[in-house]
Length: 221
Image 1 (cartoon, rainbow, N blue to C red):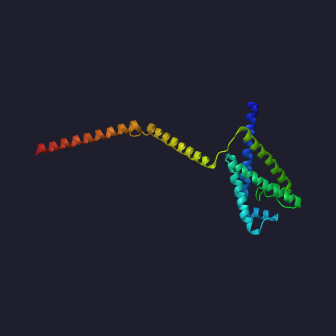
Image 2: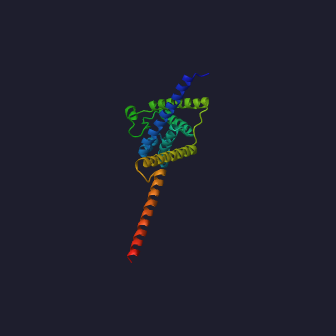
Image 3: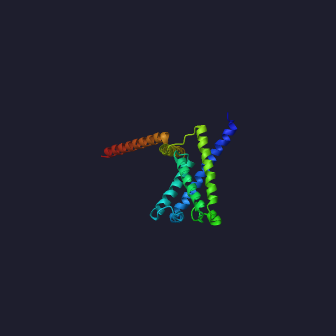
């Protein structure tokens, strides 16, 4: 039986790994998506993709990294599978480059990748991806152990809309309350009643004054 303290610690580790790996993928995908031509040149250095497919593949991979990273941060179903597939692809390509002795940059974080500029090699990127793969293995294992079921994307959207509607209603109710408290008579349920009463009394006085003036004019005649 797992102790409660150990469970809490492993839950924290699960969340930290999920947020950390997701954040890395968001950053990497965004940086490469800003300049996809640079990423396409790096893909071309491996000599395994036709030239006509380089730019579309660079955009698709970068966009997939960013979306999958966001999905993992919010624990959306399917995002971990996409990240696992992408990591497997990257590890395979890096391993191929190391085996072929290619002297190319990884460019994992776009053209401003200081790691690639400093080491000009693939081994460090390969080891980093293997480390992330180990973290993903832990995430899979902890999900199965704790019966954690990621949320579906359609349910995530529904919950977000419901929360937004609730927040809007809360803000609206607070605004009405503040208006009743500070805007004076005529606002709110009680204020509206008083305001209507004042209007009726004003109309009654005006009508009585008109009748009095009419009688006075008739008497003079």
